[in-house]
Amino acid sequence: MESHAADISLYQQALVVLGAAGVVIPLFHRLRVSPVLGFMLVGIVVKNAILVVEFTNQLRERGMDARDAILRAAPMRLRPILMTTLATVGGMLPIAIGLEAGSEQYAPLARALLGGVAISAVVSIFLVPTVYYLIHRNEDGPEATHLSPSQEEQA
Image 1 (cartoon, rainbow, N blue to C red):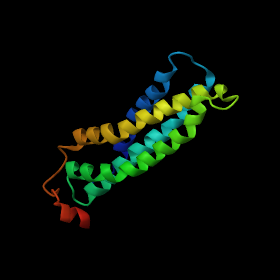
Image 2: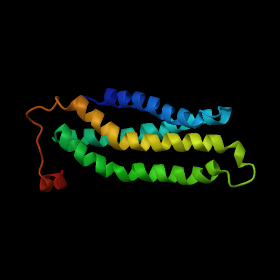
Image 3: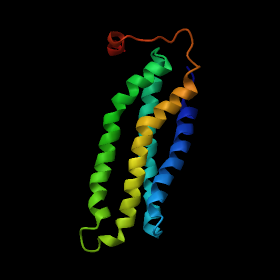
Image 4: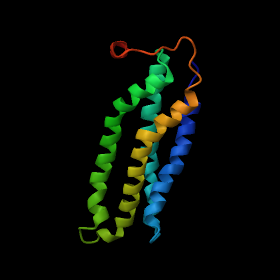
C-alpha cells in the first residue's frame, strides 16, 4: 500500500479551514488582536485528524477494508481526542467567563479557543472518519477482508 502522506495533508488542509471557522464564529460581536492568536488551536485540530487517519491507515495495512478500519479506529482514538478537548476547555473556561480581575483582556482569546476546540472535536469524531471512508471506499482490493470481532482483537 502506498504512503498516505497525501491523505493526511488533504485532511489537514480541510481541518485548518474548519478550525479557523470555529475561531471566527464567536467573534462576530468584537474583533481584537488577541482572538486572532486563537489560531494556535490549528495544531490541536490537525493532531486529532492525524490520530484517526494514521491509525486507520495502520489497520488497513494489516489487511482490513476501509469500513472496518474506520469502525475500529474511531472509537479507539475517541479517548485521546476527548482528553485533549476537555483539558483545553477546562483551562480556558475560567478565563472565558472572566472571573478574575483583569481577565477581560484575555476573555475573547479564551472564547475563540473554546469555539475552535469544540468544533474541532466534533469534526474529528464525526466528519474525518466519514470523509476518509468516502475517499477510500473503492480502493479495497481482493486482499482486504472484513474481520469478525474475534479476528479484530488479534489484529
